[in-house]
Structure formats: structure tokens, C-alpha cells
Length: 384
Image (cartoon, rainbow, N blue to C red; front, side, top):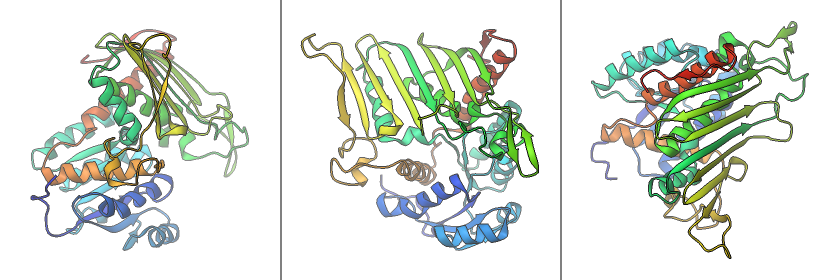
């Protein structure tokens, strides 16, 4: 892409949140212009509540300065992009204020902690877009080259008509009952547990890969460990440890979703299988450079899943990186995300996933919660 519309002055970035996601996003902003032909960026300020810790993180990750008040950052003329990596309870307030201040906004998934907050954010994004202000939600796994390739193959008809999808996202970082309390285990800060944290990724992948939308949901939630060690003694866990759902899509496919943060032995296993009338695809994030493809049109003598090592320059995003066979890592998807967001800003086009797409996922999450509370009722998705 020729960046004829790129401003001469680098785009100033402020990232709010400096721990896990803040670190991943910082790495992306630091490296994106070194590998991709995108507008230049400057890491202006890293924002967090603990002055000493955020200052240390800013120095380590390449930021010019740190701050503890995100509101003051929004008034700065040298800030063009606000990147929100704070807990979900803060997403709506920060994103809406940033959009109203004329800042482009990237916000981590899920879009917000509630459907009402997500709807308010989407309205703010639509209003800001009229003035050329862009917004995007960080469903980063769309930028894993193997999954981007899977979407291309499905769109090309390599699988024929898709019938079934199986998506599982399994982790074990909470398998130990003595694992300490964190904000992710409190409903007021996280909204939900495994559901919003990792089922949001699985649901987005299903809709992304099939370019389709969920119309019906049946779900179940479960908390296996109801109490965790807190800073002042035992504290109740107010979110789910695991979730299950069956989804019906507008195109006729049926999908199953299973997520857990107590699945011992599974460190970070996002597994996706797509089954069609002509073929199948299989992916596991723990082998993120590989996509497995089954072609039913081959003779029975040679049928079987073939391994595609997704490192060729013609594969999505790979022309900017290393020679074939030199694998990428988990962190590269964040660099790809920054690249796509910057190109959309430069072109004045709406990036994807938009807040509207984030809202669509939030509607499914809300329906899973509603179905779980009603004990297996089938929930219709509004607008489907």
C-alpha cells in the first residue's frame, strides 16, 4: 500500500495498562514500523495506576514517559491513538472519552463487561467515524497467519459447505486451588471469567472464519473453585472457571464452544476445527505456525490431514518477516494488529474487527449467560 495519506508527523500512541497486555502491545508498537510499510509511530506515554511500576515498565518497553491519569492524556495534542489494555470495567469509560476527544481507539477484547456498555461504545465509535476517527477491538488471533489462511481457504470454497465447527480454548493457570485472587476473578472488574476472557476469542474466530453470524445460543457456566486466597484472606470467586455453548449460525452451520481456565496440562490451547462437505481444517494455537487440511476430493488411498507450515511469503503477513520455515511467535499477532490498524487510519477506512463486530460477540456472550441462568434455554440473538 502506498501511504500517500500518511501525515508527516509520527502518530503519537498512548497505551493504558502496563502489565500482560500492555507489555504485548508495547512490543507491537515498538516493532511495527520496522517490518511493515505503515505510518511512523511514537510511543509517547504508558499509563497505569501505580506510578513507580508504570514508570519502570515505560522505561523497559520503550515509552518516552509514563502517567497515572488517563484523562490528562486525552487532552494532549501529541496523542493520536489511545490503546486500551486496562481491565474490562474501564473499557467503556476510557474508549468513549477518547473517541469524543478525537483519538483513534484500539481496545482489548472483550469490548466491555456488559451489553449496555458495548452498545454505548459502538454508538460513540459510529459518531466518531463520521469525523474520520477510527476504532478497533483487539481480537488478536485473527492476525495469526495460519488462521488468516484458514479464512481464505474457507472463502475460496476449499471446504465446500461448512457444516460443523468445534472451538475449544483451554488453559490451566487456575487449576491450582491456591492460585491467588486477581481482578480477572471478580465480576465487578472482569464482567465474567473464562467466558469473556477466552470464549470471546473462540466465538469471534467462528464468526470470522466463516464470515457468518450466530443466531441461536445454548450455554452453561461453571465455577469449580469458588474461593481463592485474597490480599486480606479467602475471597469468593464471582465469575466462571469454564463455559460451554452450542451455537447456530445464519448460514446453517452448528458450532460447539468449550473454554476452561482449569484444564490441567493445557497451557494456552485455542483449538479450532472446521468441517465441510469437501474438506476440513484443524488448528491449535500451541502449534501456531501449522494448519492442517483434509481434502475429501483426494482418493481414499492418499486421504489424510496434510500439514501446512504457514511460513511462506505468500501466506498472510509473512512477506514482512523471515525466510520460509523460520517460524513466528505469539507476539507477532499483536504486531500484525498494529499494522492493520495503522493502515486503516492512513487510508481512512474502517478497521476490522470494528466495535460493531465486538458488539456482535458481546451479544453472544450475553446470550450464553442468559441461557446458563435459565438452565439450557435456547436464546435468540437480537438482530440475527
